[in-house]
Length: 248
Length: 248
Image 1: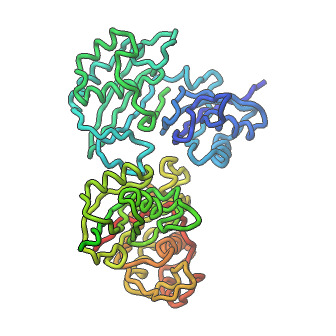
Image 2: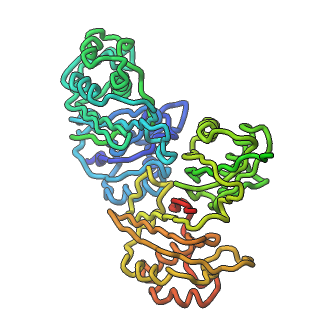
């Protein structure tokens, strides 16, 4: 007898108003919490939504993925329409599809891409203030690209991990870091098999310090060796960060 | 003896949180009110900021213009930096320049351009929800362009005026209405010598009804003749509307 159907959801959210993806007892302002609440109303029983990973408070998603098992068999389109009718307007489900029972949005993920947006101008556009980090300094993008090339690959990213008590492996593979520059705007995209807590934001802060001339590209090697959060740069703020896509 | 200097300000604002441009006794959530408050702190005496025109609650500006006379002679750059330091982050002064004493941001204006953004898709991007009107219907843009061509020119726009008690002339000249379409998005730009209350939003609602096939382009002539608000279409909501520029 069927115990229900496993659904994969692709979703978009403006993280500004939320305390991040992960449900918390102390607040109902989380993306996971909002999604579970609407799905529980839909199917009349408790559900647990598994995201591909947590996003921090204030971080946005263009394409977060999550799976959830719901009783019976519902049409994906019906679920999509229902949840979008009741979710707050800053969270939207873009797609719902059926996946095998063992599919897990986090454990099955092969690759994720994040993008971080920086505005170097002194006049940050008011319409983008929640989606771009205003950093009104001149940056040497070529130096940043050299440092990014050293960060690419399989390394122990312990120095880039915000969780000092992390017990599990801090080795990750960053397949590509691309830095695009246009009209005073810099966008850094990161693709990899997984990212530690704050890792993208710490890599971004470190690359910005390279761009300012405070660090050399070669010093990235020393940061890896230190295995100490203090060796890396500052944690760039959440508003510039978007989870772009998750691949399976 | 000098009575002060007249300054012209170009400013940008996200109108979402505000009750419109014009100062009101009942609320301090107006753009004019916020700007006057900061300028009064700057110069230590009451000031009056004159905008090129009012924008409604929720309407945005990429390039609103306003003038203000301040005591003495200040450097425009100093004023710019001061006000941007104290204004809320959704209002920004882009430029300050000195203008002749008789210059008046509203009376001296020769031409204004507004732009209205519509998303025809059913999946409005969550990041644009406050800046685009979601209208998930198929629209015949060619019919809309034909209707727009009839709205262009010098006409009595009384049917497109939201203020029923308007005593002054309702004749205006709309120089150009351009409709651009791209990826399920329609942007309608309006350039003219002046616009009545809600006029851009009522023209937009009327053009949308033409796009749906509910009205013919030719019926625009009947709306002009009626001189009655009830003859025109609905008032499109404020969030899609931007005051783009004011020319002198």
